[in-house]
Amino acid sequence: MRQTLRCASDNLDQVDRPDLSWSTYSDSFAFRVATLRAGLGMTQDELAERSGLSRGAIQGAEYGRGGRPGEFKNPTLRTVYQLARGLGVRPIDLLPDGDRQVQIRSPEQESLAARAGVEEVLADVVRQRLGRDSVDS
Image 1 (tube, rainbow, N blue to C red):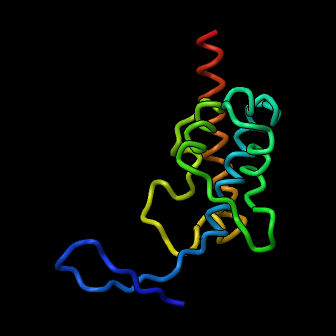
Image 2: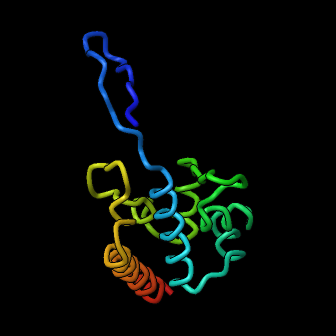
């Protein structure tokens, strides 16, 4: 399905853009939050306290789905930054495919090997964070 969007600029014609497969990005975001929290040895309650979010918000971020069938979470920028602060990581560490041009479907969802690659990157983030904490303490 293709959707035609109108550009804001006066002299630009209509641009055809395919719909974004949001569910793949929502799942990847949820996976990143849950993986980092667990890797850092935090409970959902601890992350809630550190981030200023409710435990329900943490659960929602880690589950990635809304209350209705087919509904996926769409965290606000504020939530992304609060989670990053609570986890002690960069906001980009939470965002799927933050280092490349956005695709229709998150490449992180393509295969188990792609998912394992993300886990390795997140494990490095956890190691850096834990190493920084031990140096700061």
